[in-house]
Length: 177
Ligand SMILES: [Zn+2]
Ligand SMILES: [Zn+2]
Image 1 (cartoon, rainbow, N blue to C red):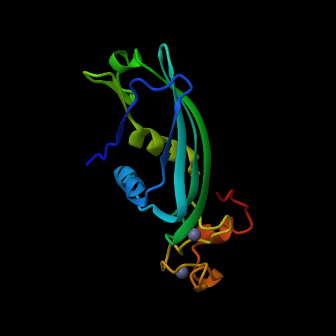
Image 2 (tube, rainbow, N blue to C red):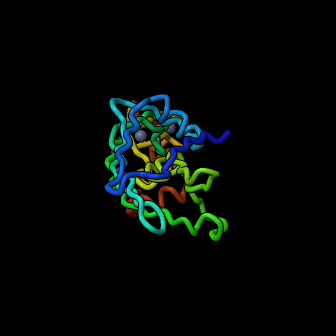
């Protein structure tokens, strides 16, 4: 289910109008579409100034807060500090011409509305690191026994149990990202 949050951007004052989004339920609804498990940890807010232009609307803002997400290596909670400035233009003419690209504006009988939920969701995606880690040196789960190697060491990596290939690879530094 797509959570949509539209705001009316018809007849904005020439100097623009500020919008604030700081309600946890707003964010949870907006993120529901990620199929992700982001949890707000502390205040999370967006401030957006929307200025009308002859050809579209200009959006300038900042997304700031702390969320918890799942570490890609160990599956424990990873704390992410988000600070994303954005400055983007949504053109009226794109609404009917761009195919396959997400368009956030929609024309209505009275003017224009903007899918601010989708736009802010996109900005958060841009702010997230490619690989979410609880710590840069997270050791992850043992691929053999599944133990969290940050919490306890297992015997799986002792030389006795390693395959000949694994023994041969020992001492070779593999880029670990
Ligand atoms: Zn981790
Ligand atoms: Zn193990």
